[in-house]
Length: 172
Image (cartoon, rainbow, N blue to C red; front, side):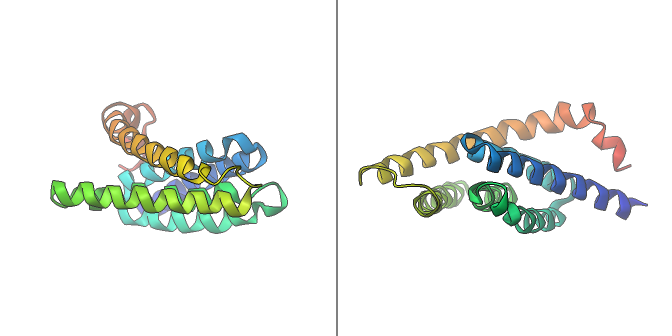
């Protein structure tokens, strides 16, 4: 009975993530917002079921790649970049503080470069050449804010939201 509940929970998380990404694909302004919202759902799955949430990540990426016919594939690629962080964050935080900060900074730079490259290939020209540096700096700020948001959301989820949504009773 417990396995079926876990599969149902992971299926719901995957379906909601795909719906968020589809909405971000249709409404182009919300592409990054919906990718971050879907990665927060993946964070919830990771909090509840640990490494099993990796399958939700891969399933969501594969299913959301079919959005090319509806809109843009940009939210799916952004999800692939941003959503890996909630899965890596617990592993990064187990390392010493200096190494942790170094790993987070490396992720921020690499993910920002990846997002700027995705924007370069999937969007019309971004303007002047220096705009790449501006976008790179902005995405680094977004990732730092995303890390802080995950830290605050983890506390809120564990102490309040998990009980309000009755997830704690669902897995008993």
